[in-house]
Amino acid sequence: AATRSYAAVDLGASSGRVMVGRVGPDALELTEAHRFPNRPVRVPEGLRWDILSLYAGVLDGLRAAGPVDSVGLDGWAVDHGLLDADGALLGNPVHYRDARTEGVAEKVWASVPPEELYAATGLQYAPFNTLYQLVAARSSAVFARAERLLLIPDLPAYWLTGEQGTELTNASTTQLVDPRTRGWSYEVASRLGIDLGLFAPLRRPGDPAGVLRPEVLKETGLTGPVPVTTVASHDTASAVAALPATGERFAYICTGTWSLAGLELPAPVLTEASRAANFADELGLDGTVRYLRNIMGLWLLQECVREWGDPDLPTLLAAAAEVPGLRSVVDAGDTAFLAPGRMPARIAEACRVSGQPVPDSPAEVTRCVLDSLALAHRRALSQAQRLAGHPVDVVHIVGGGARNALLCRLTADACGLPVVAGPAEAAALGNVLVQARAHGLVGDRAAMRRLVTRTQPLTRYEPRGGTVPWRDAESRLTPP
Ligand code: LFR
Image: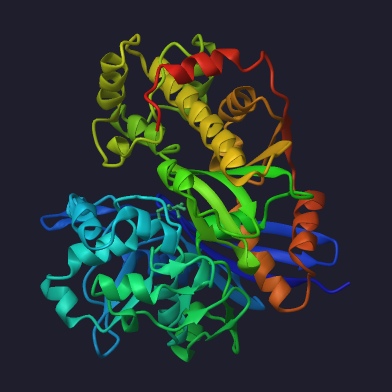
């Protein structure tokens, strides 16, 4: 039977990649065409993304991919580029870890109290939500010239096609979308003086997004027409779309720089208890709700490893597996760990302040980080089930952390639930599958997931040892 090829551009906080997915009635095969580093750059005005180097990586990747039936783009959320009246980029996009949003939330809350903001948008408090970034930028010189705002994956999509749009799943991370109507929250925007006309029209996964421009074809050696298809452009939404899940009683953890832990729901949870627990109602494929919490994720380890001069990771993880578990834990949901730098010292300090043994060697610090992540996964998933009234029997771990056996095993133990780990490239797979579906090659969301389950290697971890030690460890941390 016929197979088709789709290029998935997947932009992550530490690397970007162009993957080629071959899809047939009973086949799904992903190969890497090109991977390139994403290195944020600190300049005097702050922390910035090198978006042009990422775009060069996208073009290199499309050249390496060769002939494809369509291209889709996904990437990290909340960040954006500003364009002037001629459609030219105004400076480098600001990194969500930049300090410009410090103290901004309090200003916003003076106009729209946090309770009202949550009831209207269902988004968790995070200092970097696009809303706070826009309020922080409002009086800057660049902002005065801005006529258009494009979210990160929509920006290279514009450069490839000449067409502008705002993809809905990613728009739901701006805190300017109402998760009930799945449209803009005009009231929140107007009360904060944010002009929604800055955003290009909304488009949904599956919508056509233009064709590669003639110059792009020339530069990549591709033969046109090559359509660009809108996918679930928030990387986490793409990853959730490709979960190897059956039925409804599942939870997921998308692991990478972040851990996004939660549930897929038919409708948002907007209760005050949910706000107090800081859960987000982000939008997923087909109008689903990704009810989840942001946990610091492997960022904690990446930053330690950077500080230690990049030791061999498998060796470090093997040593961490030998360290006695749960000696010290930190709150891996704490935004105190958001900014880069001095991570081992900050972790040690958090242990000291909470009266626990201070981890010393890299193996001990690594164990503390992985125990803390597993504990945060446990806490998020048990709260999500309770707040949504949606019990689960299994936890899917996808993304880079699915390759980290120790993290998967500890998460199974902490949650007291079986963990199914994989696929690691879930975001790229979700990107490919939404393109394939738009072109009639796969059926509905359930059929997409069945195809992932049948074709991708998965590893199952059964919980061991009971959850009592985890409950005890939890009591050492202050409640969220
Ligand atoms: C993961 C992710 C998260 C989002 C964070 C910042 O890559 O997209 O979902 O909260 O990055 O954009």
